[in-house]
Image (cartoon, rainbow, N blue to C red; front, side, top):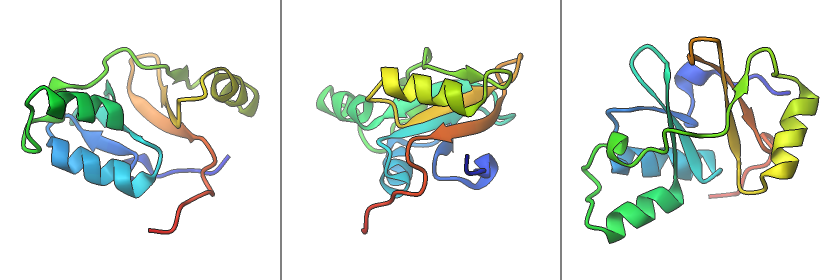
Length: 123
């Protein structure tokens, strides 16, 4: 498992970020998803490119806060479950998931599991 710096990562955005900022993060991380946290890094949810697309079709603008469209019930792994077997199990059973938040007992983001972390497209 590759260690990812969650505080300086395109995989994680603040709940006050705009839809534009979320789109930039998702484009940069190339996984179709961004993890949304509050200022203390407690997990708020996940936003996917499909969530953004549906919001914009419904009239949202790129300046709207991502907190308005975040999925607040994402698939997560607890830090006690954070091992290669559990990660493989989730990725194998959920083919549309590209990033899994890893949280502590208080729902604070402590790490991420990223599908194929070494694989990146040329931009």
